Length: 375
Image 1 (tube, rainbow, N blue to C red):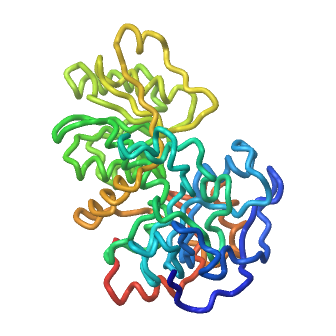
Image 2 (spheres, rainbow, N blue to C red; image 1 turned 45 degrees about the vertical axis):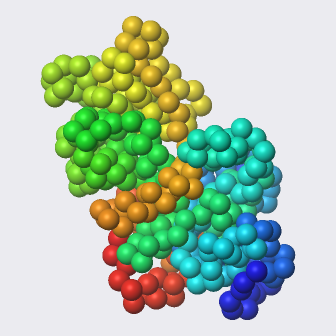
């Protein structure tokens, strides 16, 4: 095992200590403070940036029955401090890393089987937990993550961007991939003007797709345009109007595939309705129930896929794509863990366009200016 600087025995963290209550800013033991306490695939990361995701709200409300207390945020990026014996073959102290979310897959189930598709490895059901969801996360000075789900950050990508990419980016990237389209085909994104949507637009455009952005907020429509959607439609006009506009654009079959990122009532139904017969709708949003009229499934043969975050190789592909094509990650930084309540209030009041993030260690962001991080 390898380590760099001295690791303090205690650290600051923002934790969920009771459901439906504000984060508690406290001091707790640093995870695996000595290299000898690391598991073989463990990485100890000095967190630079941790961002807020809709899932964090679900954790705080008890949706996942998270055992409390639990440190929040599953979107983290920072620098490797120490690595376990197996992790040390690929990760070294000082490496810049986008934190993995799955922690300690079982290695025995069908999804972990080496003969199964690599793109399904993140679905292990016997996993120890998910960082920031069921085990301690990244709203802290240090976090323990799994090397098998973590990703090196290219020099051209800032850690301020890499943190939101840990979930929002991985989720948007895989959703576009699951649509299964070729350059020149059409993709609708319902909920295109949010933290995931503005990334999905850029990924889709980089892959040569014609993108129809659909949103129901003025700022979401503007963000969709700013990030390159070819056509932007206002869902507030109603399902019939949006479907009619898509049919006029596609003469009149509908788009080749759609992605649902909005959890509003009717979002999944709208995504299916704008998709051509036999096309694919990728469901990413997590409402309590996904409601689709039977006519879409039976009479139009719309195929619905669920999609989660990326696997290890998919994450590497995403970072390579960003290094080649560039991606603009819309972030709203809050400097210091002590601003966690201000961040949450801004999110809840709808004052955030893009991704709200806590800068835990500003010094790491200053250092990356030396090698020209630009995305």
